[in-house]
Image (cartoon, rainbow, N blue to C red; front, side):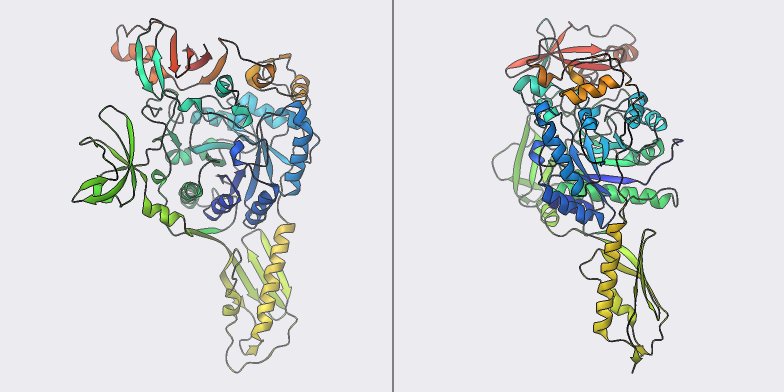
Length: 598
């Protein structure tokens, strides 16, 4: 296990909007991340300050946190606006800002905690340590890391480590992809990615030979780290992030509930070793099933191996859903998908199932013995649209002759003096029943004790008013004692690990430039988005996903397996798409692939 001391375990869920954020918390999230009105890396998932404040008020009842994604690059003419945005988020009660642009560290903003976004491309202990030194409170690591690499980073720092555990994968190192900008002028670093990696490509060598035709060679399967959760904890991870700020609410409910269940199991099986970072027990009205939510098939990416195979969803970038073993599993109206005889992805709705035969809503030919996937389960979706979870904080109430005390876990306590004159009861009083009625609050009575003689009578109306006063006092105390994190001090002597920055390091404003130069960077190029048109030969993506390895053409692996001469390729190779092509460059010493502007 990592020698670094672990904090409490945090399940971090995405939210496209306030309602989804609230559902994420009800289904077990310890924190949510949500886009503000501007400068979030998903431009179409922006939210008003008022809606974010509504999320904060709800989340903080459970000691759950709210992080705002101010994680695009910032232009010089936007600095004042971003400063104002950060102030608004601070006053709304947001717990931290997730940021990419180092210029934010030089802005005039309140002392709100800062988390380093995955767009910061944190892959080494040196970079992680630098970011800790300049004031970040939490680090979101690059998705491509192995368990060993995660452990090495965690051992180098003392602040919480956050990793992705589920959802869609960017094929490029995050924050270092200029493909969308080069093709369309829409920058991923500005929240406007056109998802080039989901295009179909034809792979050709320099002689024009086709190595793969119309395949989704850069479209990765979705991430699912369920089997590796405990290993991630042992490696030093304390925050577990679900991707999906563009996903609908049913997806967030299901996936959050799944990982909440898994983390609770780990906590339970390691009694006293771990605990969750928020309060409240979740009661579900369904069984979580990750395969029922949008997915392109699953992989654990590089967690288990530096050279994994079968990472890409080569035949479609669309959701596969769950594989159906028997037609009887289907419902009338379900959506299914399959691959036809030509290997083309087909989708259709089910009209009905008749004696083991699927009757589709339109004429299609489903290959015999071919795999069938359910992409839409009409019964499941009906369940997910309803109330699917409650979350309650267990409280202990004790009543004595002078007053009543309420405790919520180890963190919260309130006391109200009785101030009532009792009378002799005609029958023994059941005080517990009067305090069980906690109604529309996040609390549920778990323990009750009374030191009052049951022969003493208090009017029910008086006790009801007392109960309300007790809960209001607890809630006021909870708000007043909420444990905010704050911006950490920047060490001006911290040296950036590299002396030169290029266009992929996203220096887009004068404050970011000033920041890097003050920390020892000797030369830097402006971000691609501020320098104008990109030139042929410039790298648009760098990825650990290798097309040669995916297609069984990796020279190292072929030589090892065949102990002979592998198939010779005429380099360079090209990825052709409708309207253009990319040049591929393979850095076998690093086991990385560069996608370049042709």
